[in-house]
Image (cartoon, rainbow, N blue to C red; front, side, top):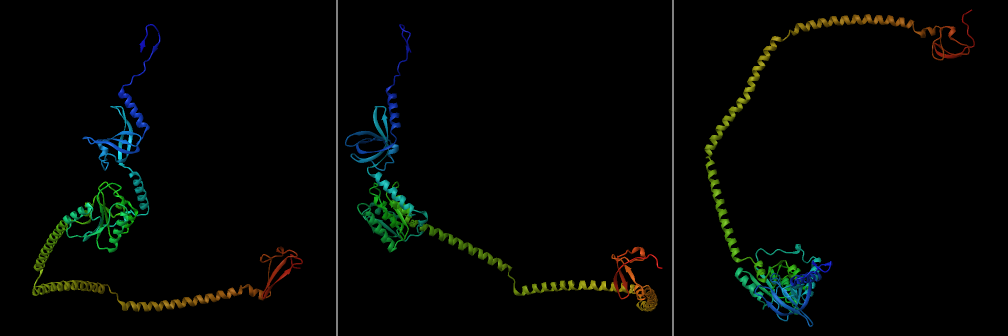
Length: 453
């Protein structure tokens, strides 16, 4: 704030930026405005600093731009570009603040045209994967003991020398069959597939190696062809793919039963070292001898134990005879003791029964006499009851209403069945029932007289 003594007006001075601040703001503006993008051009003025950083100019026919690729990114590039190489870089547009120069920071670099090849690689991989060509359940296990190994590669390839050297060192007992085929160039994929199918038809090896050394994606492209992948998948024996270096991945690696980082690694996976087999056999032999000695020792100990327990036949018979006598004595005691106790108990019961036994003869004579008296009493009582019954029956017969009716009398009853005894119970024009000795009749009263004249 500045105060002018001649005026009362107060104003603020505009901010002043340093060059560093200006460049920093411009750098941030560029980085926000231009995201990571792929840029194609030609390498020029390439410099590899002692720090590992790469500095170069990327140009085309009409323009150029400075570029830097720091060591942390450059170590994963896979190749070192040379002057005049056509490349594609994935870069961030920025500003080098120290000089105020516009430049690009390269995150990744690839040879020109690799992008189209990689897209073709991804399309084929997705297609074959959707058809189940890469499924894990299709993968076959490698044989435990490999007697012969087939190799599909170029006879002039350095990879073949590496494989043969590794197998000679590790497994000299393994037979090797070479199925020659060019590993790059026009028509190489068809020749590779033909060699694989030849090995499959002959079926003379236990495992098949499909190999070649490292190179660019263009050099390895024969192993990214569909015909090679299908030949590997239909092969009659397990296939190990050892194509390129550790960072190289091809369609053949996905189709194979096992992937090796390098051709030498493929040879090491295909055959177990002879020394390992010999060591395993020696260890098995040692274990077998130890187990046999242990079984023999246990058998000897068992035989000694049985021999100590073994007795002569005479001693066994004497022992059994003594045992039999003891058992016979025990059996005799067991059988006779209850009989003796039973005999004593029976004698005691007989004595008690003899003391309490009644005089049956006198009781029988008394019973006969009392039976006779009872029979006579019963006959007399029955006769008396019969006579009384006959007298009562005669009296009852005299009182029988039927006999009265038979003498000419009748019973008169009203509609309710009530017997009538006096004229007062009878009304004129009343219907009455008259019961006679041999039936009944209904009569209608014309008049009633209370007294007889």
